[in-house]
Amino acid sequence: MMELASTSRLLKALADETRLRILNLLTREELTGTDLMEILNMGQSRISTHLTLLKEVGLVTDRRAGRRSFYSRITSGPAAEFAGQVLEENDGSSEFAADRSALEELSNRRKHDSRSYFDRVAATFGEQILPGRTWEGLCRALIQLAPRARYADLGIGDGLLTMMLAEVAESVTAVDISPKMLDLLKQRAKAKGLANIETVEGDIEALPLPEASFDVVVLSQALHHAIAPEQALVEAVRILRPGGRLLVIDLLAHTEEWVLDKLQHRHLGFSESALRGLLEEVGLEAATVQRAARDPHPPHFMTLVATGTKPQ
Image (tube, rainbow, N blue to C red; front, side):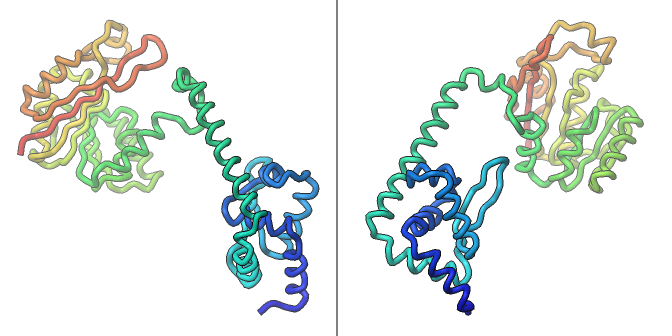
């Protein structure tokens, strides 16, 4: 039930053709004042005055995005319902039809401008600095699609991947030869409230883990640290359940020998055929090896991603 004064202000607000046209447009789409100026061919001060009055009677609301305000029609409440009836009764008017046509032209122009922009920058798009476009963000998003399962992360490094997996996994067993690496992982997991990570100190070539106990085993940038990579893969397959999957992320073969002393690498990466051969030798089925990403900084290391499935 509306008060008489409120009803009077509402009727005055609706007793104007321009304000009805604005409400009709805002029923269809959220618009800025500039959009309304263009569609209705009116100056900024007139549009602003009409919007202010419509806001005062509770028919329009706005939101800020930087320096711009976006306006939309309120659709609930007695005042909004009454306004809706008025708009519906005049839906077939020539003025409303012309405004809808102008709005459609505006939307088409926006699409054209957007398409033209992406066509223009397509060749250099991957080189631009774009808000929110990070490999970590993409990885976190894709991991949300990973199955809720039992994971083993062998050779955890900084533990970033372990933490990501823990967000979706039933459990993650983190294995590393360094107790300090494992302690840091425990601290980070505790700070994030992750209670499904178990840390195990051990060598990836002689895992202190029971066989057939994991659904997914991950070796991320760890295989090139193994003295005998084939033995590390044998161990990874041993702890996989039948039907479980192995994921290997490592480096394509390179000639940067400084990594042997400075980074304790044992191997200068792997060729695609050699890595696929190792997966097949340890009995994995449907083995795949793909080039995933090239480091933009010299010496431009290339990352390989390999997968395989343990036979049922």
